[in-house]
Length: 130
Image (cartoon, rainbow, N blue to C red; front, side, top):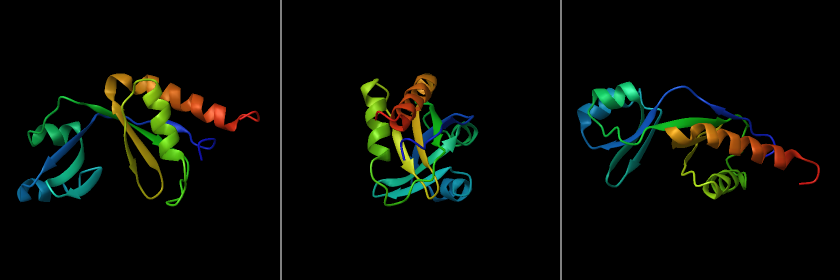
């Protein structure tokens, strides 16, 4: 899967937010890029406009990199390979595996470097000497 991934930086700034406010959840459930229920509250991944409108913390803007490869839900190694390569470069990431693609969220100032690192991982994984 590492050899076949095509890391693609998407436009926009995203914010990881959490709330238990039912009014806010009703307003954002259809707008959130991702939603996950945790014991402490509902985690949302919101575009900047929605996070701003509802008064969420905007101190950690994230960029979204989509790994344009079909990743099987029972596949092994993609998340570990990506997270390790980024960690080795000092780039924190939050991985969200969806149905069709894996999504990598990195701090916005590090997005360009993260894409370079992931493209390098892809090249190394697809080289015949790997």
